[in-house]
Length: 127
Image 1 (tube, one colour):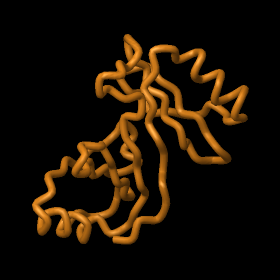
Image 2 (cartoon, rainbow, N blue to C red):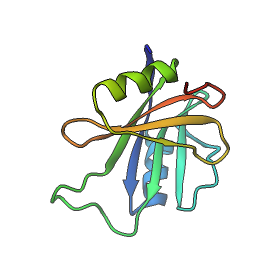
Image 3 (tube, rainbow, N blue to C red):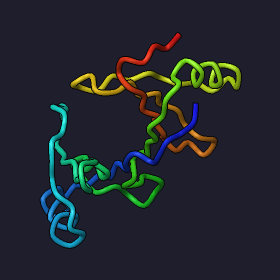
């Protein structure tokens, strides 16, 4: 199950328009397609990849342990092997299916509690 690359970062923001403008106008990214999630946000692209996922939240994250960075993600292949490794290490996980069925997401937490998901092709078998 080799990890292939860092896929994206997910940033929570209560100032969606301002944050979108920063990534677009200051960093030179472009806004692009985003699945029809039930919450506001924007996906900012480099070339053809949505590498910054902005998620709209009602208030700014506090400095009391609530971060703006919600998770980071890797793209990978070998879903069945990865699930066997997680089971062998007794690492809890949840498999997610975002709108549009473009990937299968295996959601885990590292020992510090950081949310990570590893994305596999949607048609890849899990057994």
